[in-house]
Length: 304
Ligand SMILES: Nc1ncnc2c1ncn2[C@@H]1O[C@H](COP(=O)(O)OP(=O)(O)OP(=O)(O)O)[C@@H](O)[C@H]1O
Ligand SMILES: [Mg+2]
Image (cartoon, rainbow, N blue to C red; front, side):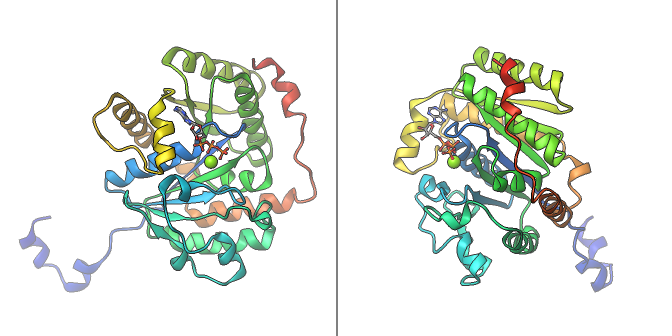
């Protein structure tokens, strides 16, 4: 609308805000630990922020959090302070140089490794409120199939699974997808293979796909791969994320994340944070007494 037409509108109409859309909520998980979830979360957050998106990165690896370490961030507390009521969400959210906000998890805090239902409710309430300020919320989870991981991943619009070509990583990724689909009704997964070349990554993805197609009712969307690079390790050691410096690696990362962010939203799961966190909470209440089954690995024996 041009400014002349705009100024002809009554004040109320001019001031009407654009309808709010729910932020995209993406969890980053893996079966096996140490496969690159936090590296990918931090760089995806930085990439989306550089495109002008308002991004919140939640460090949900509660108990062993390290987003702040990777970013060299000074934080003033953790999610534990939120749960105890000692701090407000606003005072915990920490902006970083890369243009996005971080909600720090807590390191060495055993209390956070298994959130109870009340604690999940507190997180749900505060994030629902905070969600209005963001376009994209990334949730960097712990590895494995613990309760917190299932809670955060099933609360998301999209679950991104990271794995490496290592056979144990593949088997554990399959176990995660199996538990998420069978216990939490998550059907669509994005997949990134880290520390691989193009061919190994494709072979790894195809193995995961073939066993998932055979035994599970899920849809896997291959986003791509990240090569093994000494630059990744150096950036983690320097506690400074890689920048868009025109190097092969940075161009590769940009292309990978452009592809990810260009994926259409899953509107069947984007009805808003409220719905999903409550959905997740009720499913965790439903199976509160049921242990996570461990037979997942037996069926996945055929993965590798
Ligand atoms: N593409 C890569 N090239 C080289 N090294 C990598 C790459 N990606 C990850 N790493 C190495 O793997 C280590 C673990 O990475 P990161 O902390 O991101 O994994 P994670 O999955 O978040 O681990 P955790 O399960 O402990 O949370 C890094 O310290 C880094 O040395
Ligand atoms: Mg991590």
